[in-house]
Structures are given as structure tokens and as C-alpha cells.
Amino acid sequence: MKKLATLAVAVVPLVAGADEARQQFPGFSLVPPTGDAWQLEGRSPTSVLWLRDTGSPETKFAFAVLAGPAPTSVRSQPELVAFLEAMGSAPPPSPDLELVSSTAEAVDGPGGTCARHESRVRDAAAGTRLDVVGITCLHPEYPGRMYDVQFSQRTTAGQPDEALRLEGEALLESFRFEEAPYDDDWDLD
Image (cartoon, rainbow, N blue to C red; front, side, top):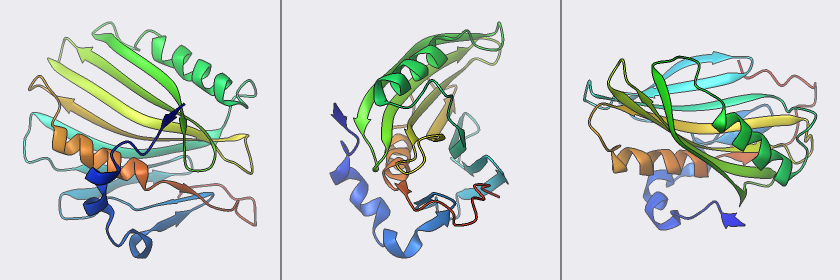
């Protein structure tokens, strides 16, 4: 099983003072993106999305948490990996999109049953490449709740920006499970 904290040395400066900046949500907390380049783009009952100004019209970068009920067939780590593999191998929703690669593997996550996923999609019509990296976890107290914490980078410039990838990894590392909401209200907005 792979450890999630593979970039610990690289992410320490990005999350210094993390405990003070930690933001609470129903069932989890994280250190949200900060700085002038980041903007909270939207919140709904099942998602929170931040966008980052990369300074380049050729590169877009986002960080998101998606939450909701886990499929009833997913209650263990092998089932979670199989679910992510099936999702990753599904045909893209548009004929202009081509799945280049998709992987899922079990990881030691932030206290729950977790798997890391990575996928790359090519958009022929737009001439872009989309890379998505994330962890998907079942809440340790309520395994019927699933969280997908991910960052994505869309670029026309060939290879993704490594500095942005490290920033995304730091955001993934900040995710922690918290106690379930006392009122059973799991909405994120």
C-alpha cells in the first residue's frame, strides 16, 4: 500500500501555520487555498471549488472537494479501488475527449478507507490536456459517505506545471476527517 505523504518535504512550507488556517466542513477539514491568485468559485451541498489564476491563459488550475453518498458496493479499500478504476476507464462524455491514462491505487489516507487516482484526458477540439489527481476516501465513522479531494490542471503547453502540481499535492495533504455533524447535516454550502 502506498503512503499518501510522498511529498512531505516539499509541502511543509506550503502548509506552515496549517492548524490556524484549517477550515471546518461537515465531516472534514482542510487548509483552503490562500493568496491573491486563489478564488472560491463555488459551493453547493455536495462540492466546494477553488480556481487559481495561473498568470497564463494557456494554463488553468482548480482544487475541489466533492462529497456524497458512496455506492452501496463500495465499503472496503479494494472495492474503492475497483470503483475508481471503472470510473477512470469509462468513455469520456464527448467524442472530442480521449482518455490517455487513468490509474487508481490504495493509499494510507487521512484516517478513512482511501485510494489515490490520476487521469489524463486530451481534448482534440480545444487542443488541451487535462490532468486530474486526487484521493477518494470513505468517512471512517460513516463509510456510506464518500469524499473526492482533487486538483486539476488544463494546459495547452504540453507538460503540466510542476510547481502547480506541488501546490495541489499540499492541498490534498491538508485534508483531514472530522467528527460527523451532530445534526446529520452533511451539506457543504
